Length: 61
Image (cartoon, rainbow, N blue to C red):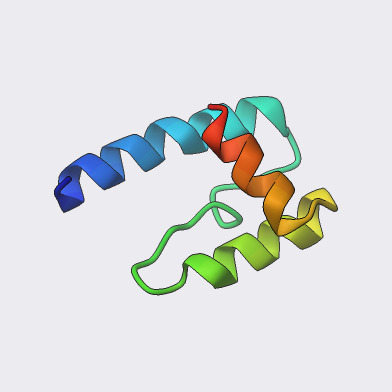
């Protein structure tokens, strides 16, 4: 999978997450190379979910 596919896929998933959790903003879902863990940490705090729960939610999109 190339970088374009990952970005396209993440943009789709980001939109679905924002629909499911209205409290999320673009800043919460900003994906930067090498900062995945930081983003997941912000989502954990915002949504009150564990890392495992977030992986399940994102995987189910």
